[in-house]
Length: 170
Image 1 (cartoon, one colour):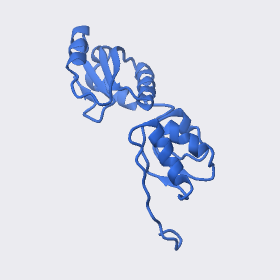
Image 2 (tube, one colour; image 1 turned 135 degrees about the horizontal axis):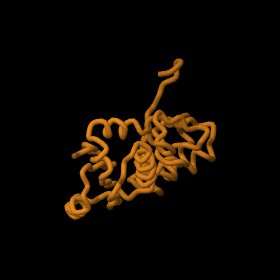
Image 3 (cartoon, helix red, strand yellow; image 1 turned 45 degrees about the vertical axis):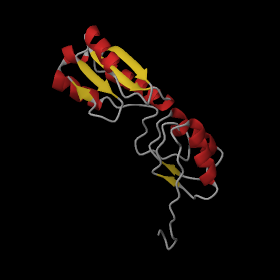
Image 4 (spheres, helix red, strand yellow; image 1 turned 90 degrees about the vertical axis):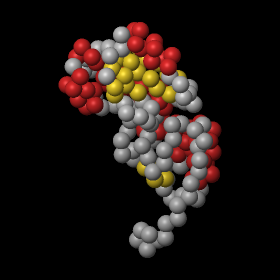
C-alpha cells in the first residue's frame, strides 16, 4: 500500500475503440483515485472523461494531443505532441543520407497512430529524411505484400514502421 492505504487494481478494456476507451474511463473514474499505466490508441476519447474530473491524476503514455493537454495527465513520454528526432539522427548516421532520402513508412490507420506518423514524418524531415511512400493500413491487416512491392517500385531504400516490430530495415 501507500501511506498505510491498501491499493486495489481495477481494469477496463478499451477494445481498441474510441467508445470503449471512453466507457472504460467512465466506469472507473468514480472508483479510482488515479489512473496509472493505462494504454490506449484512442486516449482522446478517455480524455473527455478525465477533462471533467481534473482532480483524478492520470499517468499513462498519452498518444494524442487531447490527452497530453489535460492538466491531470502526467505522461512519462508525451508522444502525442512531439516526436524526438534522435532515432532519425542515429539512422541517418548509420545508413547515410542517400538511404534516408528514400524512406517508406507504413502504419496502422488509427487516430493516435496517424497523429504519431505525422509527427514522426515532421521530426525525420528535420534531419533530411524524405518519405517517398507513406501510407496507413487497416490495424487488422496481416499481409503487406502490395505495400512492400509498391515501395520497391518507388525506390524505397529504408523501411520505417510504427507497428510493433523491428522498425528499421534497409
